Image (cartoon, rainbow, N blue to C red; front, side, top):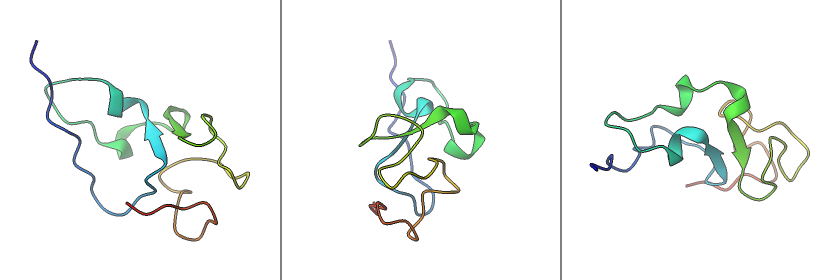
Length: 71
């Protein structure tokens, strides 16, 4: 079985943000911006709400949040 190359992060994002595409080996890279909001979770809470009580997504997990952990 051929394993896909590691995902290339484009732009700034929280290091605690996870999405389903990170764990699926495919021949083409999966862009997190193509995923819908229900596919994101926080590594600390293991659900779609971050440690600060806010929703988890590429758009909401920014440096303005207290729990933001830059890459």
